[in-house]
Image (cartoon, rainbow, N blue to C red; front, side, top):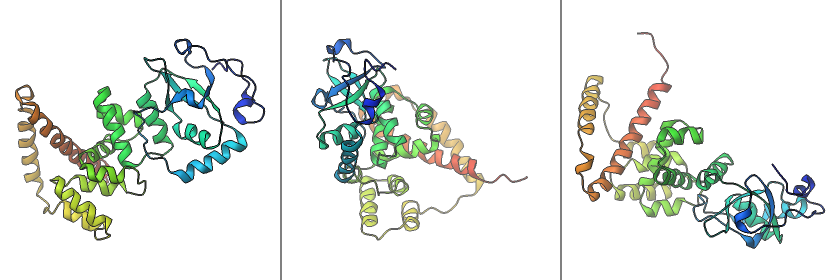
Length: 285
Protein backbone atom coordinates (compact mmCIF):
# COMPACT_ATOMS: atom_id res chain seq x y z
CA UNK A 1 0.00 0.00 0.00
CA UNK A 2 1.41 3.36 -0.99
CA UNK A 3 1.35 6.10 1.68
CA UNK A 4 1.76 8.79 -1.00
CA UNK A 5 4.57 10.57 0.83
CA UNK A 6 3.19 10.07 4.36
CA UNK A 7 5.05 8.25 7.14
CA UNK A 8 3.48 5.56 9.31
CA UNK A 9 3.96 7.86 12.31
CA UNK A 10 1.19 10.13 11.05
CA UNK A 11 -1.38 7.42 11.65
CA UNK A 12 -0.54 7.30 15.36
CA UNK A 13 -0.85 10.96 16.27
CA UNK A 14 1.95 13.36 17.01
CA UNK A 15 3.28 15.75 14.40
CA UNK A 16 1.45 15.24 11.16
CA UNK A 17 3.73 15.30 8.12
CA UNK A 18 2.27 16.43 4.85
CA UNK A 19 0.45 13.59 3.15
CA UNK A 20 -0.67 13.38 -0.45
CA UNK A 21 -2.06 16.54 -1.95
CA UNK A 22 -5.54 15.58 -3.03
CA UNK A 23 -5.70 15.26 -6.80
CA UNK A 24 -8.89 15.90 -8.72
CA UNK A 25 -11.44 13.16 -7.89
CA UNK A 26 -10.95 11.14 -11.10
CA UNK A 27 -7.23 10.75 -10.27
CA UNK A 28 -7.67 8.95 -6.93
CA UNK A 29 -5.78 5.67 -7.05
CA UNK A 30 -7.02 2.46 -5.41
CA UNK A 31 -4.96 1.12 -2.48
CA UNK A 32 -3.49 4.58 -1.90
CA UNK A 33 -3.71 6.47 1.38
CA UNK A 34 -4.86 10.09 1.32
CA UNK A 35 -5.51 12.73 3.93
CA UNK A 36 -9.06 13.91 3.34
CA UNK A 37 -10.72 16.91 4.98
CA UNK A 38 -13.67 15.71 7.04
CA UNK A 39 -16.08 17.80 4.98
CA UNK A 40 -14.55 16.40 1.79
CA UNK A 41 -16.03 12.93 2.32
CA UNK A 42 -19.69 11.97 2.65
CA UNK A 43 -21.35 9.08 4.53
CA UNK A 44 -22.74 6.30 2.36
CA UNK A 45 -26.57 6.34 2.16
CA UNK A 46 -26.47 2.52 1.89
CA UNK A 47 -24.44 2.14 5.09
CA UNK A 48 -26.09 -0.78 6.97
CA UNK A 49 -25.35 0.73 10.35
CA UNK A 50 -27.84 3.52 11.03
CA UNK A 51 -27.77 4.01 14.80
CA UNK A 52 -24.68 5.64 16.36
CA UNK A 53 -24.91 5.95 20.15
CA UNK A 54 -23.54 9.28 21.38
CA UNK A 55 -21.68 8.02 24.47
CA UNK A 56 -19.39 5.57 22.59
CA UNK A 57 -18.75 8.32 20.00
CA UNK A 58 -17.62 10.67 22.77
CA UNK A 59 -15.29 7.98 24.17
CA UNK A 60 -13.77 7.33 20.74
CA UNK A 61 -13.43 11.07 20.13
CA UNK A 62 -11.41 11.42 23.33
CA UNK A 63 -9.14 8.59 22.18
CA UNK A 64 -8.65 10.28 18.80
CA UNK A 65 -7.71 13.55 20.52
CA UNK A 66 -4.92 11.73 22.37
CA UNK A 67 -3.66 9.28 19.75
CA UNK A 68 -4.90 10.50 16.39
CA UNK A 69 -6.67 8.24 13.89
CA UNK A 70 -4.86 4.91 13.89
CA UNK A 71 -6.96 3.11 11.27
CA UNK A 72 -7.80 4.90 8.01
CA UNK A 73 -11.36 4.92 6.76
CA UNK A 74 -12.19 3.45 3.35
CA UNK A 75 -13.71 5.55 0.59
CA UNK A 76 -14.77 5.23 -3.03
CA UNK A 77 -15.45 7.78 -5.75
CA UNK A 78 -18.99 7.92 -7.09
CA UNK A 79 -20.06 8.94 -10.60
CA UNK A 80 -20.17 12.60 -9.54
CA UNK A 81 -16.54 12.47 -8.40
CA UNK A 82 -17.46 12.66 -4.70
CA UNK A 83 -15.59 10.76 -1.97
CA UNK A 84 -18.08 8.38 -0.31
CA UNK A 85 -17.33 6.46 2.88
CA UNK A 86 -17.25 2.69 2.46
CA UNK A 87 -16.16 1.78 5.99
CA UNK A 88 -15.25 3.75 9.09
CA UNK A 89 -18.22 6.09 9.49
CA UNK A 90 -17.99 5.83 13.30
CA UNK A 91 -14.35 7.01 13.17
CA UNK A 92 -15.32 9.80 10.78
CA UNK A 93 -18.11 10.96 13.11
CA UNK A 94 -15.86 10.71 16.18
CA UNK A 95 -13.13 12.70 14.41
CA UNK A 96 -15.63 15.52 13.90
CA UNK A 97 -16.62 15.37 17.57
CA UNK A 98 -12.93 15.49 18.48
CA UNK A 99 -12.50 18.66 16.44
CA UNK A 100 -10.16 17.13 13.86
CA UNK A 101 -10.10 18.70 10.42
CA UNK A 102 -8.92 15.73 8.37
CA UNK A 103 -8.73 11.96 8.46
CA UNK A 104 -6.49 9.32 6.80
CA UNK A 105 -8.50 7.56 4.11
CA UNK A 106 -7.77 4.65 1.82
CA UNK A 107 -9.26 4.64 -1.68
CA UNK A 108 -10.97 1.38 -2.67
CA UNK A 109 -12.96 0.05 -5.61
CA UNK A 110 -14.54 -2.77 -3.59
CA UNK A 111 -18.30 -3.28 -3.31
CA UNK A 112 -19.28 -0.59 -0.76
CA UNK A 113 -22.33 -2.40 0.63
CA UNK A 114 -20.42 -5.65 1.08
CA UNK A 115 -17.33 -4.05 2.62
CA UNK A 116 -19.34 -1.85 4.96
CA UNK A 117 -21.49 -4.71 6.17
CA UNK A 118 -18.58 -7.10 6.67
CA UNK A 119 -16.59 -4.55 8.67
CA UNK A 120 -19.51 -3.77 10.96
CA UNK A 121 -20.41 -7.43 11.37
CA UNK A 122 -16.87 -8.46 12.26
CA UNK A 123 -16.79 -5.67 14.84
CA UNK A 124 -20.24 -6.83 16.06
CA UNK A 125 -21.61 -3.33 15.65
CA UNK A 126 -24.84 -4.10 13.80
CA UNK A 127 -28.08 -4.75 15.60
CA UNK A 128 -30.03 -7.87 14.62
CA UNK A 129 -32.40 -5.78 12.51
CA UNK A 130 -29.63 -3.77 10.80
CA UNK A 131 -27.85 -7.02 9.89
CA UNK A 132 -31.08 -8.53 8.51
CA UNK A 133 -31.75 -5.48 6.35
CA UNK A 134 -28.14 -5.31 5.13
CA UNK A 135 -28.19 -8.99 4.12
CA UNK A 136 -31.53 -8.39 2.44
CA UNK A 137 -30.05 -5.57 0.37
CA UNK A 138 -27.12 -7.74 -0.70
CA UNK A 139 -29.57 -10.46 -1.69
CA UNK A 140 -31.85 -8.10 -3.61
CA UNK A 141 -29.39 -5.61 -5.12
CA UNK A 142 -26.45 -7.93 -5.78
CA UNK A 143 -28.33 -11.17 -6.39
CA UNK A 144 -26.47 -13.05 -3.65
CA UNK A 145 -27.64 -16.58 -2.88
CA UNK A 146 -27.94 -17.95 0.66
CA UNK A 147 -24.76 -19.94 0.10
CA UNK A 148 -22.85 -16.84 -1.02
CA UNK A 149 -24.08 -14.85 1.96
CA UNK A 150 -23.12 -17.74 4.21
CA UNK A 151 -19.57 -17.73 2.83
CA UNK A 152 -19.30 -13.95 2.99
CA UNK A 153 -20.44 -13.73 6.62
CA UNK A 154 -18.79 -16.93 7.85
CA UNK A 155 -22.15 -18.17 9.15
CA UNK A 156 -24.17 -21.33 8.48
CA UNK A 157 -26.81 -21.18 5.73
CA UNK A 158 -29.49 -21.87 8.35
CA UNK A 159 -28.29 -18.91 10.42
CA UNK A 160 -28.33 -16.59 7.39
CA UNK A 161 -31.83 -17.79 6.55
CA UNK A 162 -32.95 -17.05 10.12
CA UNK A 163 -31.49 -13.55 9.95
CA UNK A 164 -33.19 -12.83 6.61
CA UNK A 165 -36.53 -13.94 8.06
CA UNK A 166 -36.51 -10.82 10.26
CA UNK A 167 -37.32 -8.77 7.17
CA UNK A 168 -40.82 -10.30 7.36
CA UNK A 169 -41.47 -8.31 10.54
CA UNK A 170 -43.86 -5.34 10.25
CA UNK A 171 -42.27 -1.90 9.92
CA UNK A 172 -43.39 -1.01 13.45
CA UNK A 173 -41.20 -3.76 14.91
CA UNK A 174 -38.28 -3.17 12.54
CA UNK A 175 -38.18 0.55 13.31
CA UNK A 176 -38.27 -0.13 17.05
CA UNK A 177 -35.49 -2.74 16.95
CA UNK A 178 -33.13 -1.14 14.42
CA UNK A 179 -31.34 0.95 17.04
CA UNK A 180 -31.71 -1.52 19.92
CA UNK A 181 -28.65 -3.79 20.28
CA UNK A 182 -30.19 -5.40 23.38
CA UNK A 183 -33.07 -7.00 21.45
CA UNK A 184 -32.22 -10.74 21.15
CA UNK A 185 -32.16 -12.07 17.61
CA UNK A 186 -33.65 -15.43 18.59
CA UNK A 187 -36.71 -13.69 20.03
CA UNK A 188 -37.23 -11.72 16.81
CA UNK A 189 -36.79 -14.89 14.74
CA UNK A 190 -39.53 -16.62 16.71
CA UNK A 191 -41.83 -13.62 16.41
CA UNK A 192 -41.20 -13.52 12.64
CA UNK A 193 -42.58 -17.08 12.38
CA UNK A 194 -46.06 -15.94 13.41
CA UNK A 195 -48.61 -16.28 10.63
CA UNK A 196 -49.79 -12.66 10.37
CA UNK A 197 -48.28 -9.20 10.92
CA UNK A 198 -50.94 -8.55 13.58
CA UNK A 199 -49.85 -11.63 15.52
CA UNK A 200 -46.20 -10.56 15.25
CA UNK A 201 -47.03 -7.15 16.71
CA UNK A 202 -49.03 -8.74 19.52
CA UNK A 203 -46.18 -11.07 20.49
CA UNK A 204 -43.63 -8.26 20.24
CA UNK A 205 -45.64 -6.05 22.59
CA UNK A 206 -46.16 -8.87 25.08
CA UNK A 207 -42.41 -9.51 25.09
CA UNK A 208 -41.70 -5.81 25.55
CA UNK A 209 -44.01 -5.74 28.57
CA UNK A 210 -42.21 -8.68 30.13
CA UNK A 211 -45.21 -10.94 29.68
CA UNK A 212 -43.59 -13.34 27.25
CA UNK A 213 -40.37 -15.27 27.90
CA UNK A 214 -38.59 -17.53 25.42
CA UNK A 215 -40.47 -20.66 26.46
CA UNK A 216 -43.89 -19.03 26.34
CA UNK A 217 -43.08 -17.34 23.04
CA UNK A 218 -42.07 -20.65 21.50
CA UNK A 219 -45.40 -22.13 22.56
CA UNK A 220 -47.44 -19.16 21.33
CA UNK A 221 -45.81 -19.15 17.92
CA UNK A 222 -46.25 -22.84 17.23
CA UNK A 223 -48.90 -24.71 19.22
CA UNK A 224 -48.54 -27.90 17.23
CA UNK A 225 -48.44 -31.50 18.45
CA UNK A 226 -45.45 -33.56 17.27
CA UNK A 227 -46.23 -35.58 14.16
CA UNK A 228 -45.25 -39.17 13.46
CA UNK A 229 -42.30 -39.60 11.12
CA UNK A 230 -44.46 -41.28 8.45
CA UNK A 231 -46.83 -38.30 8.44
CA UNK A 232 -43.95 -35.81 8.24
CA UNK A 233 -42.36 -37.71 5.35
CA UNK A 234 -45.67 -37.79 3.46
CA UNK A 235 -46.25 -34.07 4.01
CA UNK A 236 -42.74 -33.19 2.83
CA UNK A 237 -43.09 -35.31 -0.30
CA UNK A 238 -46.41 -33.66 -1.19
CA UNK A 239 -45.05 -30.23 -0.28
CA UNK A 240 -42.00 -30.67 -2.54
CA UNK A 241 -44.01 -31.79 -5.56
CA UNK A 242 -46.51 -28.95 -5.20
CA UNK A 243 -43.87 -26.27 -4.72
CA UNK A 244 -41.95 -27.30 -7.84
CA UNK A 245 -45.15 -27.31 -9.89
CA UNK A 246 -45.73 -23.58 -9.39
CA UNK A 247 -45.52 -21.74 -12.72
CA UNK A 248 -43.74 -18.56 -11.63
CA UNK A 249 -43.91 -17.00 -15.10
CA UNK A 250 -47.71 -17.19 -15.00
CA UNK A 251 -48.04 -15.35 -11.69
CA UNK A 252 -49.05 -11.69 -11.48
CA UNK A 253 -46.73 -9.14 -9.79
CA UNK A 254 -49.02 -8.94 -6.75
CA UNK A 255 -48.98 -12.75 -6.43
CA UNK A 256 -45.19 -12.81 -6.69
CA UNK A 257 -44.91 -10.23 -3.91
CA UNK A 258 -47.10 -12.37 -1.66
CA UNK A 259 -45.38 -15.62 -2.60
CA UNK A 260 -41.84 -14.44 -1.89
CA UNK A 261 -42.14 -13.93 1.92
CA UNK A 262 -44.05 -17.22 2.20
CA UNK A 263 -41.24 -19.10 0.46
CA UNK A 264 -38.61 -17.33 2.55
CA UNK A 265 -40.45 -18.29 5.74
CA UNK A 266 -40.70 -21.90 4.56
CA UNK A 267 -36.99 -21.89 3.70
CA UNK A 268 -36.18 -20.56 7.16
CA UNK A 269 -38.22 -23.34 8.81
CA UNK A 270 -36.60 -26.02 6.63
CA UNK A 271 -33.14 -24.62 7.37
CA UNK A 272 -33.88 -24.81 11.09
CA UNK A 273 -34.97 -28.42 10.74
CA UNK A 274 -31.80 -29.26 8.81
CA UNK A 275 -29.72 -27.60 11.51
CA UNK A 276 -31.41 -29.71 14.19
CA UNK A 277 -30.68 -32.84 12.16
CA UNK A 278 -27.03 -31.82 11.71
CA UNK A 279 -26.67 -31.03 15.41
CA UNK A 280 -28.43 -34.20 16.58
CA UNK A 281 -26.07 -36.80 18.11
CA UNK A 282 -25.43 -39.73 15.80
CA UNK A 283 -27.09 -42.97 16.89
CA UNK A 284 -26.39 -46.50 15.78
CA UNK A 285 -29.33 -48.04 13.97
